[in-house]
Image (cartoon, rainbow, N blue to C red; front, side, top):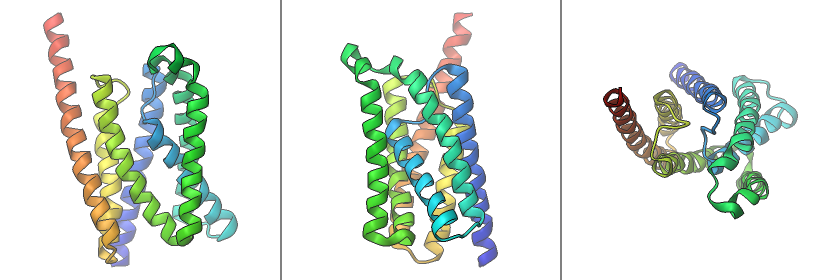
Length: 215
């Protein structure tokens, strides 16, 4: 059983690493951001807080701690793409003017919420429950981003599929451990992720067809 759980953890880690790496690549290549702000704020906060907790408080230099630290560093580059290119997608003069204050506020809220989870539920339970709640938020946020952009800009099937698998695998081992909260929120994530994959595939195919007809 431990072997199965370890394999699932490794698969999840690889998939999320691919999501972050491809988000950075696409962000700089297309001069945009590839992760919605609310998802990014919760993500960088979770990984930063629990990387610090594992390495400096628990003194547990395990695979998960190293992964969290690596993901936190990758998240910094994703934040850079958002700050560098996100202003162009803000609507109206006021939106562009308030871009930095708004981004800062959301990032602060992300850290505050993650810290509150740890304070109220403890670092172990808080880590699990906040992770799955934020994954539900992420899955919905990607759908919203696709609908708002009306294109595949800043998105890829690689990100969509790896994000889905990266959440599905911890859902499986959380379910094996008998955690109903992880089971239900994991199912929500999986459903939203499948919808996102389907919609993104449809948009990409439509863009390809339009490109062919234009030549």
